[in-house]
Each structure stands twice: as C-alpha cells, then as structure tokens.
Length: 347
Image 1 (tube, rainbow, N blue to C red):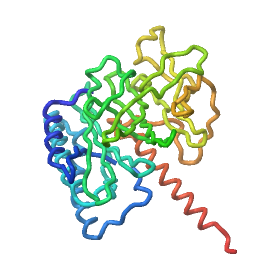
Image 2: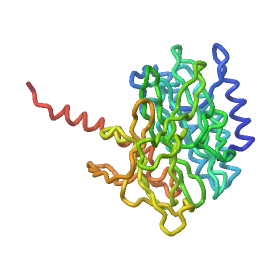
Image 3: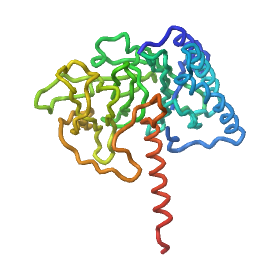
Image 4: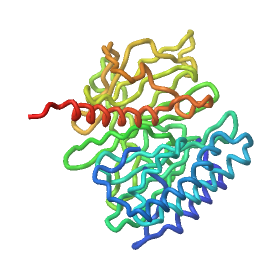
C-alpha cells in the first residue's frame, strides 16, 4: 500500500539523524525477548517505561483516531518518539510490549527485530509501515526503515526487493531456516488490502554483505505439484474480508500451513469471494526452498486455550489479532513449563 510523501520524508529525515559509528541507515523494529537478553539497569528501564507510556497513545490513535488528520499526526509523532527512544543505549533489549497496535518481533536467533504497523488513511486504505533494528555489540542504534511500495507494482511475485520498495505487511511470525551456512528468515504477515478483501503474505528475508535487508527470492517452488507453476519470489493468499483463515507455521509438522480457498460463487477471478473449504495446503523447507505441498486434509487437534482459526489483525471492533495470539501462545508455553516444573516429584 502507498506511503504518503509526508510520512516517507518524515521517517527518512529522522533515520538520517540516527547515524551511528560508520555511515549506516537506521529504522524502527522488534514480540518475544531475545534469547540472551542483556539486562537493563533500573534507571535505564525506568526511562524506557516513561517513553513507552508516551508512545502508547500515538500507537493507538494511528488506527483508532476518528479523523484522518489526527491519525496522520499520531503516526508522525509516533515515529519521532520511537526513533528517539531507540537511540537510547541498549534499546534493542527493551520489548515495548504495551504497544498493542504495533507488531514487535525478534528473530529466533536474536540478531534483529522488526516493528510493523498500519496507518489508517481512510475507510478504504491502510498503509503499512515498519523498520528493522539490528542487534549491535555496543548497544548503539542501527535501524533500517521500510517503505511500502506495493501500490506501485503490478508483479509483486517475481522480484527481489529492498527496504525502499518493500511489499508492506504486519508481520506476526518469523521462521528461521538455514541452508549451506546461510540464514533465511521467513516472514508471515497480514495486509488489510482493500475494502472487500485481505491478504496474507509469506516471503524470505536475507541480509546482503553490507547489512542491507533483502526481501524475496526464488524460494517458492511448485515442482512437486501435479500441475507445475513457475517459481515465485514471494507468496500470498487473498480472501473475503469476513473470512477467517489459517496461515501460520506449525512447528510439529515443520510446515507453513494455510487454508485452501475457493470462490463462493462462479467468479474465480474475484478474490474477495474466496473462503476456506476445510482442506489445507502447505510449504515445507527443502534444500533451501519452500516446496509447495498440494491440497490435502490435515487432522489438527487443538489444545486447551488455542483458537480454531486465526483472527483478523487490528479488527476495528477490537478483537484479538494474530500477533496477540502468538504472544499468548508463548505465555502458554512458559506457563506449561512452569506447571510441569512445579509438578515434578522430589527425588
């Protein structure tokens, strides 16, 4: 989706002010704490809490303020305040976990985190925004802003993109894979695409030798399908606005599983009529690619506290979003681990 000139220029100018050490471009990002989180001093954490309190209202108003001018102002103020907060030493280790409308995801290996959110321009358009914050040895800020150019491309599936022509999404999952000594980070995200339909995206993030993020590549293969399709550089599903769809990584199956969609009527070109039919498709990581697994019926068993389907992100009625579901899942795992420890009999 398009990013306004005002927002783009504001973020770009702020980023230029975040040059640290050698010349680097900085940006906004990071939901779970890094695996080996560096403890913050009491005084530092108190300062972060104070700044986060100021950020919360801006973050809420970006989506929920009544008038477009208020939402635009909140977005601009949020970016400024967030960048100032991230410039504090060791900001990478502060989770900002009270920013309910902002996705904050750490990479599984804790080398970076990514912030993404959407700015509600009007009733018909949401604009995705974001940034990647790298972990640095000295705790200084290294930030890469992401500029959404999805409205200006007709062929989003066949190109490697940089942070200046990013296909915008609100990310809710990062899956780390390795191949021949290289790390590949698969991003799963939500796009409030149009008034009638939503999209969910899957693409691979890598980093160039100079540290710049690269989005996409020939990672999505259909060679094992009965009817072969060209390799894609990223993948998405588009579906009816009201439909609930599954599109997430299943660690037990080690696959990204998603609903098989069908049109409700006899107009297969109208993606805003597509809904799940009860079957699923998947991608499985093989030899450095995500290999498509054709339509099949999976038998999913839900545990206590799990939801039968994923919820829409940033629902206007305030319903749970996929990011919150992921956070709750992590809390459940921690709780289960604590319970099992408590129940362990004494030797």
